Image (cartoon, rainbow, N blue to C red):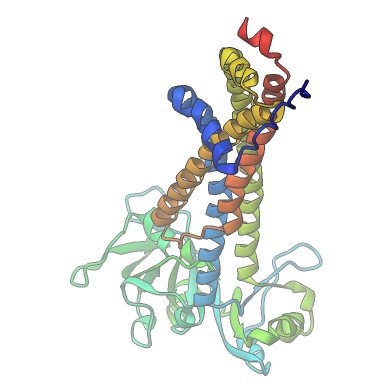
Length: 402
């Protein structure tokens, strides 16, 4: 009598077989798979966009700063020890230019006058912009550009001519210039012809909100005392910190504490940091959306196990092991989430590119956001599908076929 034959060893499934089995459930129920993957896609798209859009904004800021230079310093009149408004000496610019690393310096002075679009506006309803006496070399030092018309020069600075910052022009309702018939604005009780409108100047926002007149006209018409309110200077890039440390004592040796010194590019960097802080908040919201999507995938897989009990029982009866059944449903969950993650990455890239294009920024797509989006979604799928896969593997064949 021959010995009983041992049952054959179950065949191992290759990676392609596991993927094919995992995709079977998605093919048989495409609408359910699509809706389940949608939650993952939304979460991943939000995370990709939240990482990529601030990166694009930061790159745009770096490009802007590189074009305008980060070596600009601004010294302003601060407060006296008694709390009053301090004054910078009228020799401030000359003193600053004596500092060896300083490449150039220019001053502006606040003029006590209000600006009106015409003489029919009540005196209490001025445009809310400041008036500054300025020098012709101000625009070059700040790296600004004239959008329309011309800037103050050796000829027009001695006459009632005014240049508007971009925001001041908007408040006054002047968006273009006709050289043959230049618009006029009322400053105090004197009419001035608008000879230029400036482009935005991120490093000098106070100039954007101001109107600029010649230094000599400010003295003649408004009794300007010639003391600068702000001194702008450019220094060698490597020496900006050293110049900043001695600037107050150089401008006003008797009271250096009355001079406030800052670096405008630091303010722009702080604004970018604040935006990144909000980006972290939205990144958290994207994570919540991804978690909700993972719960949706888990729910779909649990329902799939319940609906496919006969299929599970038949496969077990034909020799499939628990590990193979578990791998089938785990693969389906990972594929489902991975597909959603891939779609989410595409949506996030499209959203980033569209928003960056609308803002005039370069579209920056961090590799960690692209690769991480798919990887995180696959990990969520593995976690979400773990319980349904184990439940399917533990299902006895006789009970499944009953």
